[in-house]
Length: 338
Image (cartoon, rainbow, N blue to C red; front, side, top):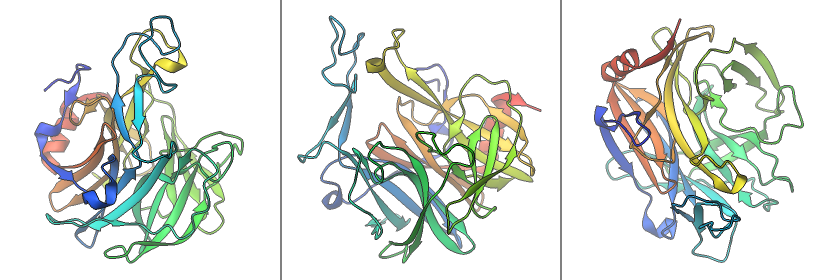
């Protein structure tokens, strides 16, 4: 099925499992951007819980223009808060997945009072390194200017009372003044390695105690239309490495003023060889033909891939696809191959 962007929607390839946090924990606000991790053939899932509900307005002009139809600085996006707190706050809920899963809020023991309007660990990815379970994502509330850095938190009691026991803020490997680092993809089988950029591929290694970070490999830029931002974790597959990345088109309208930002997300499959040289990149696709879809997780169990993503910042999903089906889709929808 083709999406509204005239690209493939892949939900038909497998089984879509909605992921639900008990309503007593959400206050009716949005959930989004789950991540997934296979530990000893059990699937663990983290869901990002938001303190707002996101609505989209449809109009042809920005809110500051004469005749504009939008009423806020966010342009066509409206963030509705049930409480008197206009910040954009994230909590994270973790569980061992089953048909009757009860998600438990991660106790972020090392949180401090927020200094910025975006609070909490955003778009967390789960990873198991050296038999330790971590959640890693961007945090922007520790500085008064919102400078974002990837952080790495070790967790314990993940099945019952998930609790943070350590945290490190990861430095940029070359530019301490960069404003916001996010969407670094942890490499499951290379402890403390991330792909911080996908095109060209930049592989970095972080020190889990100090946060120091070094660039260990930079590949060549490939000729492809799109920005290939990080999404899922990176896992082993076909004698190399495999992940999902995303492209973002920030402007739905021709008039590209700041108030007209209204991002449309699409996704790609990427395969690297064992040395992190890109071998294949798929054409763009969506999951459910949505405008805002965001993938934070992929892992395997048995013969199936499990891909986790958020839909319109308001729901969380897990797509179960047979390995052969996904490989076949990849090979039939290539945009780049060596």
